[in-house]
Length: 318
Image 1 (cartoon, rainbow, N blue to C red):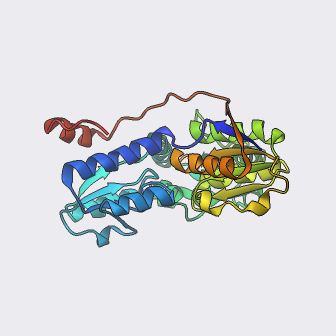
Image 2 (cartoon, one colour; image 1 turned 45 degrees about the vertical axis):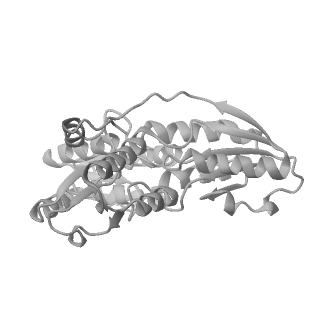
């Protein structure tokens, strides 16, 4: 067996920042620390922090007044911030800066009177937070059929934005259809789909033709991980999205001589990748080849309020 380890893979700068933010907050303030929704969409990361005393909540009302509340990497609506302030919570914002960029674009377009078409997946935490920036201005679409059903006309003032973790190809098709139907529509000056999502998709696209099977490490509720598996399947390659080595099925391999591409979504830890490599190496004598198609050197600092608190007590950064 040959394993092609796709690079880049795993944690992106936004996920690293969110995880370091929660680690630092625990060291500064102790536990329990409350987190609005999952800090990132990964089972292993969430379970680790639960063991360390983090409490994940779906409503701000679940948090005791005066407690510490951390907003996850996916961002939140202004209404959530208002409720947190009313409850006198010590709020720490771990929103990915690339998500914040989309929020600012939404606020700008809404103030200018645009009707905003958001390309994204209903119910995703990021989509809920983005639409919450200007609830009366948004319409959500998930595919070109929904674009064709939009009720707008040629005189409507329209703009579009996208969820940051979409399939690049799918988003491009939807944007193209939006522009065909509504030539007056405007969009952000720079693509909303984040660099990490694009890079991981590019690696799978380039490596899949050499593979018999693709394994994607990531949780089922991770949008960018789902897209990686879909991308491989669209190329005709069997692909499996799994949380860890315990979910590998030997029936996937008919000879043990397969070429296997392994990648990981932007919220999956490297440890689960290496567990899979070790499992395949032990069972099939697999040889590992790193295949890095692009280097990543992006870094996001911790939230300002947390940096100030850590410096005040001379706490080293995570």
